[in-house]
Length: 168
Image 1 (cartoon, rainbow, N blue to C red):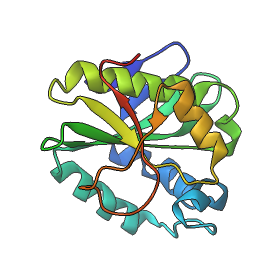
Image 2 (image 1 turned 30 degrees about the horizontal axis):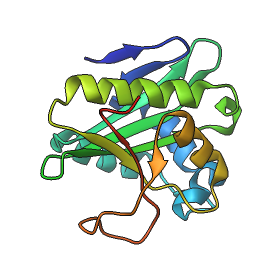
Image 3 (image 1 turned 60 degrees about the horizontal axis):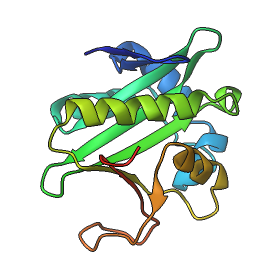
């Protein structure tokens, strides 16, 4: 499936044509500060193409661009499956202009529904918002994720928010 339509947004499987929008998103320090890059990611077309070519080879990683009919490009959503532990890690980044309109909630809920429909072995979705990123925590709460103890098998020491398939 190349496109997933919801009430407010369209999630479309990322193609090479999307790289210029993604470069702008990833180079925006307002977006990237929460992943430790307050001055942006320093992406150019070559670096973005390298990322995209790697992405296409990894069958457990799924990346989508998010569009809204009024705004156009809003951002990205992503998930990576972990078959051993039956969970999928989530990520979302939105342009500041697309924030505060309910579009991110719609996009993330749509992605979660898609994962639970198409990935029958996945029992939970999870993410790790920065401790100070209250906007992200509010978004994840609206999408049914809750803070939990971080599983010991996960690297790092960040927060861990999860939603099980059985939870709505």
